[in-house]
Length: 280
Image 1: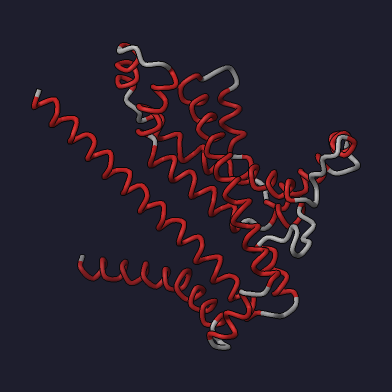
Image 2 (image 1 turned 90 degrees about the vertical axis):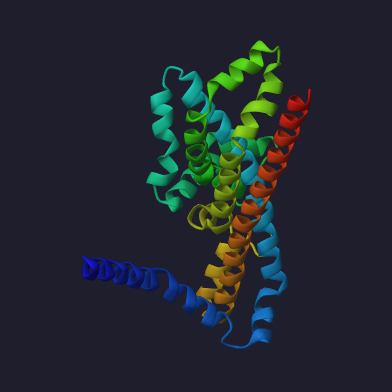
């Protein structure tokens, strides 16, 4: 029994090293193979900085919009259950079931200048394909399942009695949402926000199709890294990849710290309220 467990632990450890540790180590080693000065030079070029700025900005907007949309969709699926909710639940996973390059192609065919929708938008001064707006549409499409699936279990686990008590005490719908439902969903909302944010930051397939990949304008970090590889600049690509991985890891760390801080503040308020009630 002990030998079998040791063998299983060794197998799992070996698989983790082979799948995660070695590839990560190879990227880091390549990024710093020319020294610290070479790494800084690779990630501080104007094109690289602009690519990361655009990636962070559009990913943040995507995370905010899709977290709000994911909350609405999850509430509809779990609370209202209208006719056709089963079909909607299946459609939510569509972006996960098709290649992301196909997602980008779908957007090009829908919003491109040769389609009726694209022509109508162009006539009204709105360009989608090969613009930042097109990147936003692509990221919204690709990341919405992450927000919905992160929020659905939390909504299923909500205690409806707390909401009913708030209604009985005369709370308005807005107050019930802000004081009862949203605080109970804070961890799920944080997870949805970070999952969509980090997923948007690393998206490549749909963005490379719909953005036009114009440096300093519509080139995001993942496409910038691919461009460096096409030009045989492996060191620069690895350096940019390290920065992208660091930003994703930093987002998860900040989420954990923020949720922990919110949890402590709520516990302090709860203890203060309990103390005041007992004093009375």
